[in-house]
Image 1 (spheres, rainbow, N blue to C red):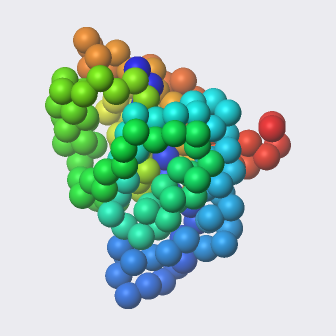
Image 2: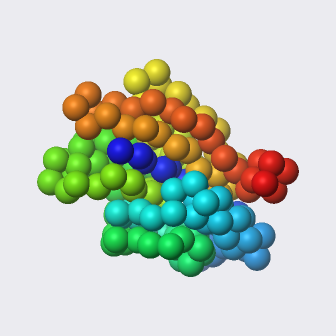
Length: 161
């Protein structure tokens, strides 16, 4: 199974609350670029889990518009910036025990995305995510651990195709 962990695109600096910060025009373009990369390299997702924060929801909208298929989309309140990577890992393992997902996407925030990749991988890889960057993990359901495959950002996509 494959897990893709994505940070939202560039967001406005200020809003009434952190949860209400919207994407900038650059952030939308970043998310579209990552969505195009995902379309070429993953194409379809069984489920997209999205933070309820506005910038993550807008990122998911842009990414999903580029994909050929998404089985379902779920807003998940436990994947906001300060949530626990261990709690998310436990939640995912519970979902995987009940669902036969082969490929999922998680759209969330720093620092959680870095901590989550470390939590999900056997070598505790902890990448630093640029905005709209996505990490790929090959996940073993038996061991409940994965292998870090790589990290792609809009900048590397545009320079490497």
